[in-house]
Image (cartoon, rainbow, N blue to C red; front, side, top):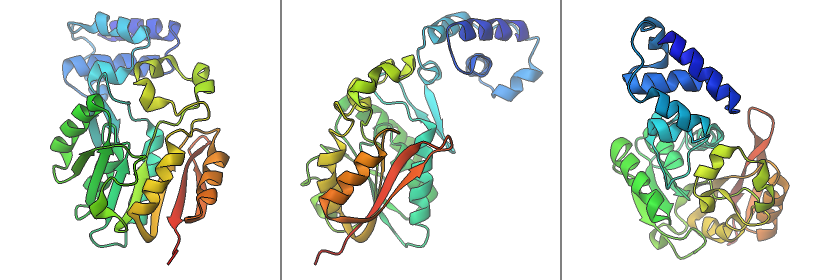
Amino acid sequence: MTVAVRDAAAVLAASGVETPLVDAQLIAAHLLGCGRMDLFLRGDDPVPDGFDDLVARRARREPLQYLTGTAPVGALDLAVGPGVFIPRPETELLAEWGTGVLADLSRPVVVDLCAGSGTLALSVATSIPDAEVTAVEIDPAALRWTRRNIATYAPRVQLVEGDVTDPDILPDLHGRVDLVLSNPPYVPENGAGTVPPEVEHDPHHAVFGGADGMSVIVPMLDTVHVLLRTGGRCGIEHDDSTGGTVRDALAGHGGFGDIRTHRDLAGRERFTTAGRLDQS
């Protein structure tokens, strides 16, 4: 097993995979039904069936999460596969910010727009048991995964199939929401050549937000505004090249204040937050 994993790591490294040894170990652990660290205790075990096939698929830059069927997000292992955007670590930072905002609220009302696999909605729901959480997703293919993850982790989360750019969605929540979180399609089409090959396996419409990355974010702001109560907060993930554009869009809307952009662990502008102004 040890030799096979080392050889697999060499294959993955030659194909450009960023973490070849870790990926080879995770593939082996997945097939053996154990944790990655447990492999060190099973070095003499035979190579599991299907190992070479999964390594070959990973070498073709198929996402590791598609091979294992799960994407770890904090304490969650979300089910993912073709048809849904694979959650990235950057979104965990937005989720952490959001749960911090809600720390002093009782029974907070939260909406996740562009829910995808349910990352943000479920991060909040599992961290804050009394939160009233609604997830909105438009893509039927993604909704299959959203439903599955909600059923696994927080069946109380309400799932709505709808267009986040339509301010008339969720009429019962208008003016009641404490926090809106969103990881919308945001990569500029003109930056498509700079994304890793794995991104090609994500649904195109879940990744790219038009020529400037703003084709969903800008029209979504009316929805965010109508949902939030006065003083309610929102957090929107965006491309590291569009932080200024998102800030300008929020400021130009006229209904938001306290606009701040937050950086990820690499120092890149990753999500922007704001509060709904009192316009009475």
